[in-house]
Each structure stands twice: as C-alpha cells, then as structure tokens.
Amino acid sequence: MNPLISIIIPSYNRENLMRETLDSIIEQTYTNWECIVIDDRSTDGTDAILKEYSNRHNQFIVITKPLELKQGASVSKNLGLQLARGEYIQFLDSDDILAENKLEKQIEALKNEDEKVISVCITSNFNKINDAVILDNQRKDYCNFSNAKEYFELIGEIGGYYAPESFLISKELINFSGHWNENLTLNDDGEFFFRIIYNSNKIIFTKDTFVRHRQKTGNNLSTLNSFQKATSLLNSWKIIEILYNTKYNKLNSKYLDKKKWAVYNELKRTYPILIEQNKLFFYNQKKRDNFLYKLNKLKRRVNLRLKNIFKY
Image 1: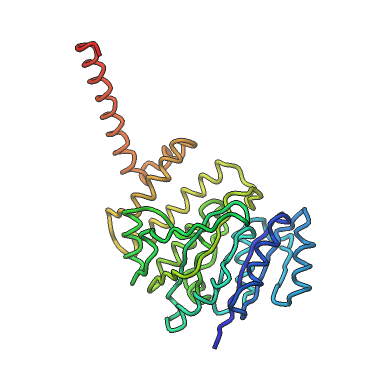
Image 2: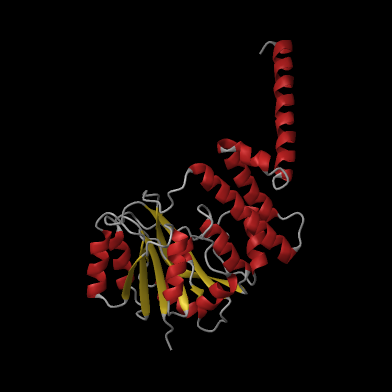
C-alpha cells in the first residue's frame, strides 16, 4: 500500500521560479501525492501559473489565502495542514527542487516504522536550475539516530541543522508536536522542526536521494522589520530552551549553548539592547564574553608593554 503524501507549498510572487519547483513534483517517481499551494495573494503572474498547473494536473490544489488571514509562510503552512489528506507531509518552498526519487526513497525508508519516525536526506545548495548538483554526504549528521537526544548531542558538538525540505514527516507526528507558530517571523522553521525532532522516536537518514535548496532569492513572505525579526529569533530559542530543559533536565547543554552563542553574537552585532533586556537568558554568554573581553584587553596591554621594551 502506498500512503498519500501531501506536499505543502507557501507561495508569494514566484512567477520566475515556480515552474521549476512544480515540475520537480510532477517528475516524482512516487505518484501517490497531492500538492497544496497556498498563494499569499501574489501580485505578479504567480496566480496564472498555478491555475495552469492545477488545470493540467488534478493533483495540484491551489488556494488563495483569504483576506482574514495574515500574510506569512507559517500561516500558509498551517492552512495547508488543515487541508492535507495525506498520511505524510512534505513541506517545500516555492523555489526549491525535489530529486525525482525523493518521495519514493523516503516512503520506502519509513514503511516499516511507526508514525514518530522521521526521514531526512542530503541537501544541495544552488542558485540556478542548471547548476551542478553537489552532494556533501560527509557531514557527520548525515546518519541515523536512534533517538532525538543523540542528534542534539551531536549538533552540540558540530553545529548545523537539516533543511526543512529534507524532511518527510507523518501528519500524526505533526499533530502531536503542534503546528507552525504563527507568532514567529524568523526561525519559525527552526522552532517547528526542533519540536518535530524532539518528539520523534528515531531519525532515518535516506542517503540515496536529495533536495536542492535555492540560495536567497528575495520575495520573503515576512514583511516585518528587522527588530521584530530579531525579537522573533530570540523568542524562538526561548521556547526551544524551555522544551529542551523540560525533557532532558540538563543545566549545561552543549546544544543549547552552541545555538545561544550564535543568537548572542548576531544580536550583539545588530540589536544589543535585546541582550540587555534578556540578561538572564544570556547569562552564560555574557559572563564568558566579559571574560574574553578582559583577557583580550590584557593581551593587548602585555603586547604593547613588550613592544615598548624590545622595540619590535
């Protein structure tokens, strides 16, 4: 039996790239799928392209987001989840590409597993459709994990994350973990997929397929300003920290520490006021940052003294 896969695509002003994404779905070797495209009231020619594809292929379901719903990819994805009839969910950005065997290989990997097992695959970055497909299969996180904690511990050592489009997830696991957080405008995908991994029983790495992730192309669905995005980034990691500590009860998590350092450094560069307003959250980072600052200041003083003494 071949379970139905629901592919959910949020879209906004993608007339130049949408065909490539939709063609990669039509070319799938696994044929039992539906594709739900939620158009966020595009103002270019995206609507005409979507109508063309839905008229040619009845597996495409095109929805124009109602005016009463706010713009944003998370809102679109949640609407797609409400409409999805599939047992499994494939999220896909409107400019990314699936390898022809992506759905087939991942369904095959999951066929004897329970609903809390997820599949991921290799991600290849690209700019144009004719770019060479480069598969970096040497990444240390490109492997199976018998539980979520194993994954978090490795990421605490090496960093990194799985691209959203690399996942194939049961709808049951999504319903259990919770849908997309519509209050987040940045790192909403990081927070969502953290919950998916967090609630999973096992991660299967499907090595013989891949997705192509297009580098930034503009037309971001979020229209909020940068300070609000920075606040969203911070709030997403507050949620993640609460969940992580609730489950694992660890005061010194390498995973959280590495991720919070990345957030800290970004906010220090852009909106340091958010660090001052969240001193407790960044307590370890501020403490170590102050120590490093004092250490570097001492080094500069010593070097200056030595330079004056030895005239070098």
